[in-house]
Amino acid sequence: MSQFTYNNGVMHAEGVSLSAIAEQYGTPTYVYSKAQLLANFDSYADACAGRDALVCYAMKANSNLAVLDLLARRGAGFDIVSGGELLRVLAAGGDPAKVIFSGVGKTVDEMRLALTHGILCFNVESIPELHRLNEVAASMGKVARVSLRVNPNVDAKTHPYIATGLKANKFGVAFDDALDTYRAAAKLANLEVAGIDCHIGSQLLDDAPLLEALDRLIELIDALGAEGIHLHHLDLGGGLGIDYGDEEDSAPVPVGDYLGRVFKRIDGWRAERHGGKPIKVIFEPGRSIVGNTGVLLTRVEFIKNGEEKNFCIVDAAMNDMARPALYQAWMDMQPVVQADTGAATYDVVGPVCESGDWLARDRALSVQAGDLLAMKTAGAYGMTMASNYNTRGRAAELIVDGEQVHLVRRRENPADLFALESLIK
Ligand SMILES: *Cc1c(COP(=O)(O)O)cnc(C)c1O
Image (cartoon, rainbow, N blue to C red; front, side, top):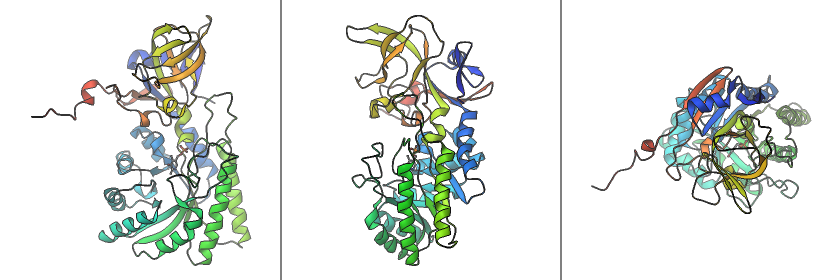
């Protein structure tokens, strides 16, 4: 059930009308539902109940401190990709012992910071990174727990959405090199080989490629075990898709179904090995935790009817929501107040000076200047990818909890944007 529904013809976030929110807080504004956020996390947590499993929210999807705090209090760990993200986890009261650190380019300073705080594991993506981490840990008199991000090279032909699990990309260690890389890691004195991980792509509607990746990881875990290298955890990454409301998309597999199949496979594998040592399972969901928790609320500035196209010019832009400009992503755009007058077809665009600055194309909308629109399913990779291009302050962020509205990030004003700059003396 969505937390963004029409009540008397006006779209609400939980119990609060988006019209009232726009009146009080202005636009463009990200509005998140606390109930939706917790329900999404719980769908993972419930499927993991009674198991040795950890859900590490991939916070690059939405890293607002209030979001992190709500998830941390619910028991979430975090998947981070920078030292800055670790500082956010700490600022939000998250537990560094439940943090895993992903990414291909970790700096010495970032490694030091993460070791200082005793994170759970580094997801290492190359041999040079293993050596750097070993040296940094040695210089601090510490041992770093590592997992290798393996690139399972699952078949792309049948799953065109997979973007990161193939041989031809910058992520991970090639499947065929994985054993050698583990042997190299096991020889480094200040590393503890703890796990294996993969992350094969994003917005996967079908879990077949994820289960195929799991099978490949299991193959490696068995091969490593045969050499006396025993892993503490296996981490399947994130990537589960969500319903953006695009009619062409099929419905994404429910979280519980996917996790159920993962655990069934793992239980079967353990039974085959006559009750071999249990292994902790980690998931790194991002989009499926926060995507449908948010809308981007925007107001129509002008309607501009052209010879070939009609434009609906709004006060949100590609700097607020980059997904359409960046990936030609289809995002649902709905009026906040339902109108019964005739609709026309519009491209919904922002004021930024780029032709790529569009939010939605060829949409039937019944709109006038001054109306409010809600871009749905905007909670993931929205605010975290926002920029200040065109010296536009980033949007405010709100969390609605029932009838209550909490401002969790104030709108940036222009003075904020050049506060760090100085003139040549
Ligand atoms: C981005 C990312 C995730 C989260 O992906 P979603 O598709 O948002 O679930 C998980 N793990 C890693 C390593 C990532 O880079």
